Length: 156
Image (cartoon, rainbow, N blue to C red; front, side, top):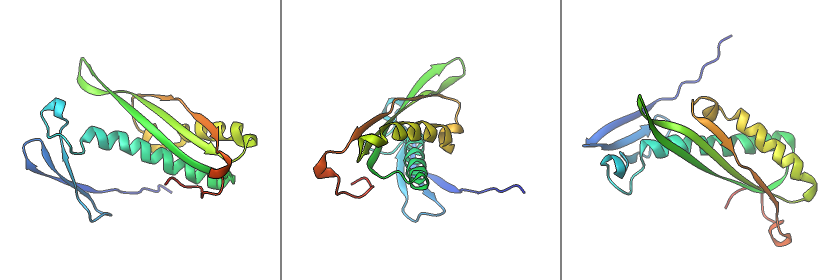
């Protein structure tokens, strides 16, 4: 059986190189613009930001779900995602996505398991798997200091 999930987003122009976007599932619109380097408005979300944010949010939600299924307790996970936009013979495109996840665990005994789960997450993240850019994973795992160990497994 072919299972499909459909995601609909509507965007409209409000002025040259700028507009608003609203996903069907979210009532709050987001104002966007082309990036300033492409003559857009500064201080607005850009299509490039949305693209990179899609990878970042997918990585975090995939990791937390996989950690839950694996019963890995962790203090927090954060990821910095750097999208490298480069021009080639066909125009501008993302040539590389650098994933820099930082996992903070409660116990040294979970370090290897945490690294393996970060690597597995990189392979499982459906947004990252759906793009043509080179994906580079630069993970780090640290042990939470004792006063941090009472915190929940979530980012503040």
